[in-house]
Image (cartoon, rainbow, N blue to C red; front, side, top):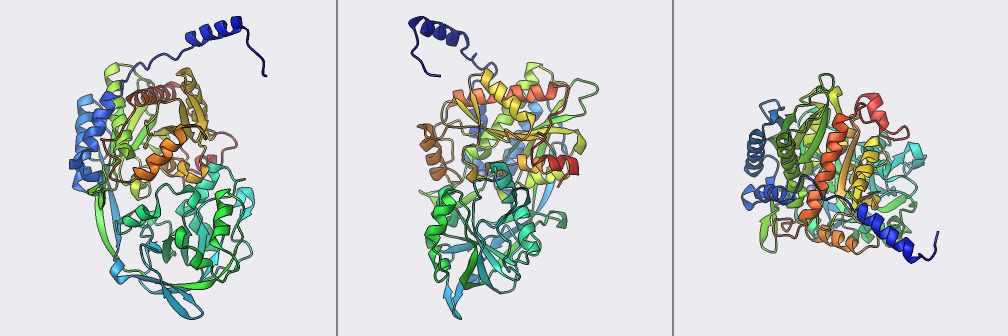
Length: 537
Ligand SMILES: [Zn+2]
């Protein structure tokens, strides 16, 4: 509908919009939240690496604040839930990788061409195997999509471009790109190693910075129940700017592949003209860390045994290679901002006297940066009855760096939590939208996914933007410059009003879910509903 407005309509409209103006946030000013961020992201916390003294110091601060706010400890040792890890660190001087073409080895430069991923337990022996390009390397039965169909992959190393075809919905595509789901399909096809090429169209961090911290240790949860990539012997990440050397002689170019991948088009699949020969030397050790869990008890005799989880990760990536002379990766937004929000929320709810029927569980998890490990452990071994967990609202790097007008909702269409978030946001003058950047895989990239894998309806909210608006380049620049860099610190600009409004939305969502007669429910057509029916992953 398009027509000229009469002056009368304009005046009416103006009056209506004044009346409908969103009320100012009731409970937060942004400042108390930011004060917590300043503590957690201070240089003396040393970037809160999992297992470090800096992280323990941050956790001690959190426990102290929770105690002062009057929350109940809900861990195993008081507020703490201990978690054990194995740590793996590449010894690059004693490691090597080469392409083999016509029987001749062409050494690859580690760091420049490629680097080993120690997220998996790399085989100790030397590996030599032919390379096959498998497109996105995905098998998605729900969409009858199979990049592996018709290829002989037995004993091969597969090369794939990170990404997914456009006709696969974002959440589903993200799910199948998790290491565990990807490996299930590749293992069944007889694959022994993977070489992944980041999609140049969706790289949050430039190669130079990805490569800079490749020696940084990777971790996994101790215990075979958590080994999801058993049988995978080799894993490399390859620099897209050097990727043509993989494709030389194959009849295809990487430029052609990248152009298709940018638009999420189907990719060709074919044998490459080279083999790969690698030897990885890895230092292994054991690390202890902990989640911090607190409860704000509900009041309803029948429902207070159920909990709504509000989660955020306390860990970050610690001390690393210097950038502009700074070695401390403070993690102010990632995820000092989320941990601080939990503290602010806990204190606010406890002091307000506003009671909810269900209990609220505050989960400050560890080792998110290592692959959502602390939350994965908690979801598998919760400190409360697993069936009592009705929802997870996860807060990770919600980025209040512009005024909050657009709320990006991960999981918006998967459960009725999405409908609640949309309505609450609207009541505060904010527009809730699905993730406009499905290639970035946000739905599986933070701790909500650990709960989803155990059937718990979950959601993650972020300050967002609509594509093509002036806000878009602000977020893009933040990722390029500050994401997982020392400049994600407390000297960066922050919009306290946006943070306060975000907190208000989160508060209303928590209380609504905690008070509603029925538990949150998956949508009938949600792919992730299966984990609720199946009782976990
Ligand atoms: Zn992070």
